[in-house]
Image 1 (cartoon, rainbow, N blue to C red):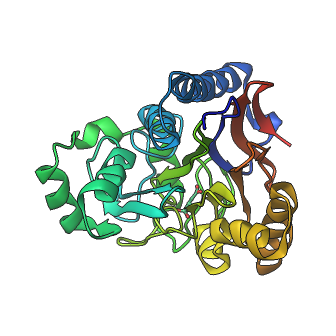
Image 2 (image 1 turned 120 degrees about the vertical axis):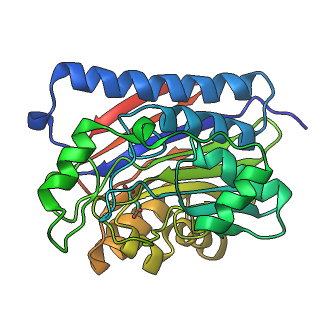
Length: 310
Ligand code: ASP
């Protein structure tokens, strides 16, 4: 049965985002980019698209914006390249698709969706993912497309060290810019999608939480849909996206309670920073994070919200 209860939430990464380091122009640019992705995803839902379509649409808009660390504008790894990760999950049947360490793919989230539908595997990486991409009409871009002056400067500062950092953060070991979306459609189906360039100066071949089903992305119609951002090495150890779903399923917590526990207790205790956007099977939305800020936005019939700081 169709319902009027649908909604979407998106993020553009979490980390050290201080108001003092923002200009009003920059703030407006981020808000506008979030608004575009949010509204395109929401309008798709309103026009009958599935949650899977809506999260793919929202995330690919964020990938196309150089402001975020995904697709165009992805961070530089230790070799000065862009290796991107993405995953998508369908809460109606628990099917997932993901790619890791892919290069030159314009929209890694679209490739992840193709893996979901056209492969018997869930996660394809590197060269193998490229071969699959070429067999499935994927749009590639050249190196120059992915370049961004700000990200290049970020990398130059730490490239001779062993440290790596989250995008949108000035201090080493701080992240940001990964993008993600979760949605509930009028048929009661949940979906989640996440896409990232990873962390500045990450080692060649490093893969974080974003393309790992259960760590960075999870959706289950019985509980919720979750997309994470933050320190991948910690999110993977906490299985944060699945943790939130499991807390709801096995402990009967609400979405908000489960998110608070997973992000502000479990992840934080281990030393990880980050946050999630999440939506449950009833359309409740929660966007908890344990750091200074998270680019985030949400929309349903009752509200439309775009926020950056705490
Ligand atoms: N979670 C991402 C990663 O570790 C980074 C981020 O969220 O910005 O690859």
